[in-house]
Amino acid sequence: MEPQRRKHERAAAAPGHFAYAVVLLIAFTGLPWLIQYPGNQKLSTEGYGIEKLIASHLFHADGVHLASMLLVLVPVGLILERKCWGTLRFLAFFAFTAVGSSLITLATAFIVDDRGASCGASGVAIGALVALGYSYPEHKLTWWMPKTKHLVWVLVFLNVALLAFIDRRYAASAERYFLFPQSSGAVLALVFLVLDPWVVSRVERWKLRREEERREKVVAIRDRVDELLGKITEEGYEKLTRDEQTFLRQASKHYKAE
Image (tube, rainbow, N blue to C red; front, side, top):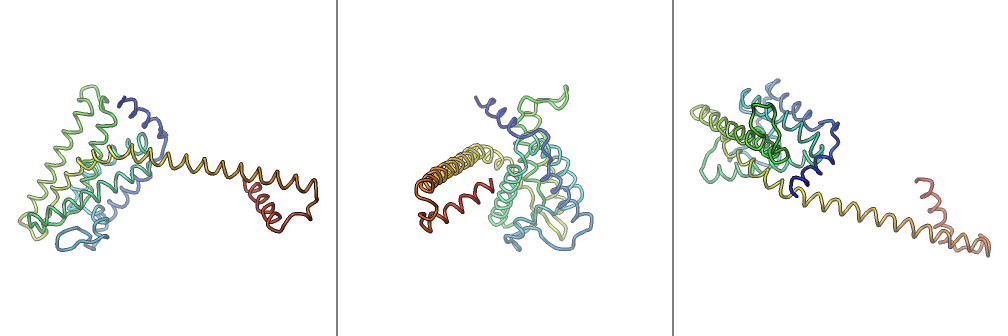
């Protein structure tokens, strides 16, 4: 039953859907590094707020950090956005894992009293790997590679090891980093995958309810128009009240708009 549900969700997204979110991600993460943006949008216990909670994911510790994130998130994100979710759901996934991993990192920093800065979208990249393994568990990238459900956990381990390496690399420098808690992106991705079908079903129910209300409204308008037209035929237009005349004019505009 579960594989059939995943197959149905993948079929719902158009295979030719353009990956707008991934393209924007490349632009907004690559540009600050290329121009060496001087602003400090990194998250830490010494400087945090709503703007840094969001913007910190666009800045990275160095070129290795940025490249490793893009190498994972671009190909995986293309698959998830184009074939599984579409742009809106991918953006929802990005926001959920990004903000969630930032909050966990910040809370951990307060607990262990670490003043290193957190930045980058590594939490999202790790979460995207987990989501890919969930969506395509039996797929193989090439014949000699393990199945995706096994491969992604190897890649997750390597990404977590890289975060620990960056933390250690800058431990003795003036600009310290605290990136390891972003590995919580794996857990957040699993939470998102559990919540996603529930949210989607609620949205679909809301859309169906709105469509049903719209149809009922159209039927009610038509019935009322037929009633007033019958009155005009029997008694003449001048017998209509001012409210009835206004209703007919509004109904006429409604039909023209459709």
